[in-house]
Image (tube, rainbow, N blue to C red; front, side, top):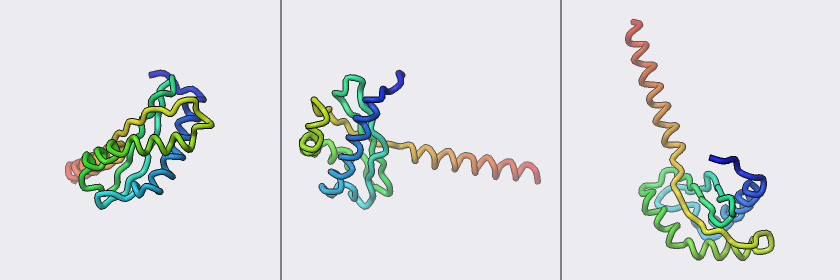
Length: 124
């Protein structure tokens, strides 16, 4: 995996900032009983595709929420285009993903806790 260029980071940051505002205005931050936020944005070296990783907290059905974002993709991209048309030559295609980093962190913590208890059980 190659290192992101300075321009990629700048564009990803710009998109992240604008999408956060767009999500708030379109009421996309609270869905399905939980909170949705942008965990990260990565952009391809040609700046034509942006991958938006969504962090979902206490969302009952993450797949359904992701489908809703896909349905609104054109609308979100159009709004993004209106906001950044003076900074970018072309508006990247948006692809949404579920960021499951937090799930992995919780699972790892549970495993460490289990190992710790097993070790304590062996010592006594």
